[in-house]
Length: 349
Image (tube, rainbow, N blue to C red; front, side, top):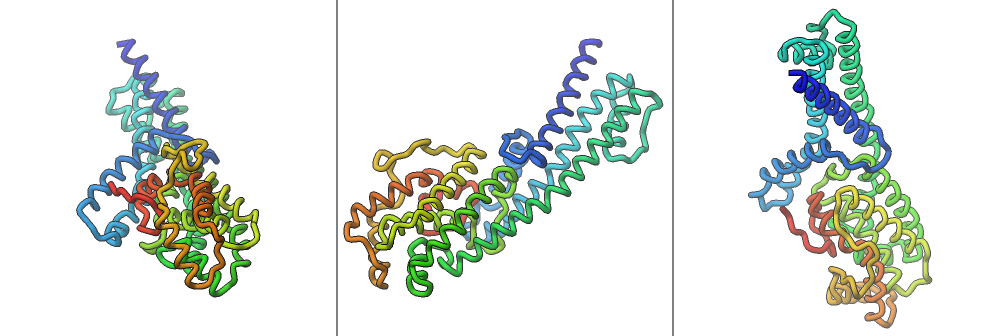
C-alpha cells in the first residue's frame, strides 16, 4: 500500500508539473518549444477534421470546414490541461489527505474550478486547495491574455496577404506580380517592396514559432494563404534577381534570405525535413525549366526587360529557390494551402 501511495504521489506531482510546463511553453515562452500535450491535442483534432473533409473534392468546402480546426484545437487545450491537473491533484489529495479516491477527486475539481463545495479541514489540504485554485485561475488568465496577442499577429499577417492580391492576383504568382509592377508602378518600385516584405518575414518567423497555433489559422478568404504569399514573394524576388534586366538590388537578396530563414524556422517547429546547406544542381528544385521559360515568355510579351542568357538565369533562379524549395510541399500540406503557381506537389492527406 505504501509503495502504491508513493507511486501515486510521484505520478500526480509529475503530471501537475508537466501540465504547467506545457502551459508555460504554449502561452508564455517567447520561442518555439516542442510540447507533447499541445501536439497531441492538435494532432488528434486534425485527424478528426481530416476525416470530415476526406471525401470532399471541393477546396472551398474543405477550407470552410478546416477554418474551425485551429480555433477548436486551441479551445480544447484548456479542458485538457484542467483534466490533467485534476488527475494530478486527485492523486496528491488521495495520498497526503488520506481520503477516498472519489473524495479526493471532488476536492481537486472543486479547488481547480474555485467552486469551494468540497474541502478538508487540515493544513496540508488547505495549501493544496489554494495551490490548485491558483493554477486553475492562472491557466484561464494566461489563455485570455494569449488570444489578443495571437489575433493581433494574425491581423497584421492577413493585411499583407490581402495586399498581395492587389499586386499579384489571386492565386498570387511571381510572374503576375512582376507584370503588374511593370505595367502600373514601374520595376524600379520593386525595391521598396523587398524591404517591406523582409520585415513581414521577420515578424512571420517570430509570431509563428512562438505562437504555434497561428500557423493553422486560415485566411478569411479561401484563395488566400500565408504560405502561398510567402512563396510568391520569394519567387518574385528570385526571378527579379535572376532574369530581369534591372540594376542589382541588395534588398531583394535580403528579402529572400529573411524569407527562407523564416520558413526554415517554422518548418523546424513542426519537424519538416529540408537540406541544411542546399546547392543547385545537387539539390534540384520543383520548378522545371519549361515552367521558368514559359513565365519569361509571358513577361517578354508585355515588355519586361529580360537578360539574354535564359539558361544562366534559370541556374541563378534555382540557386535562390533551392534554399526554400524542399519546405514548400510540407508547409502546403501542413496548412492545406490553396493551389498556386510553383507551389510544388500538393499531396493532400
